[in-house]
Image (cartoon, rainbow, N blue to C red; front, side):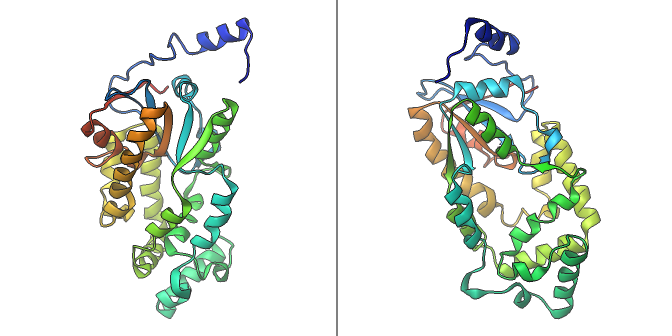
Length: 295
């Protein structure tokens, strides 16, 4: 463990704006991405943070309270252990459809031509490289096209850097195999329709994406919940698969994890909100979940 001089230690304490390690300030409303989990037999607080998987790099700035929350924790949990190279390399094969299914088989010839042309003309990538990939993963490739900047990064990526600076172990709540299996439970034909729909309405898709980006940056959890409930995001019909069931599985794990050691949990902000969100589920289990200032 790194040893600080007295002068450095005093500087760190003062930079936290009067917040002690165990007493981060409560936010005046529920609109914050940073939450403290206490009670129900926990010996020390754990922390919950809502992420956005893709942001302009210059927009990713961590507050003093968030940095303190990471310091207060023994381990950092992400949706997956993205610090493990095996997770990423193993995930490449898991992105492919089962039974040798090909993207071209999911479309009428004229529809496939529209998808192929978009990848060639707008993304500058030949679609032949992704014939076996699950269409929902291809939808994710459209997001950088909607970003208002050239340099894009992930909050998880920057959080890992912060965790490593503090010598925190990075772990995952799910494996890549499990996440990939989620997209096997949604018909490939339906995924292909969503991909085509996104391409055919890129202007509208960008408006919805910008709306989500805006409310996230303002930490408006109530607005995030409203946006996630809209059909335009393609989430409503599959919310039990993409969010609710995973949230229940995570809470079951966290009950044991938090009992043993204080942890910092960072997952997509959509997992925090709603009756089946992590905040509500943890409260239902008897924990106190407190909104923290995150500025």
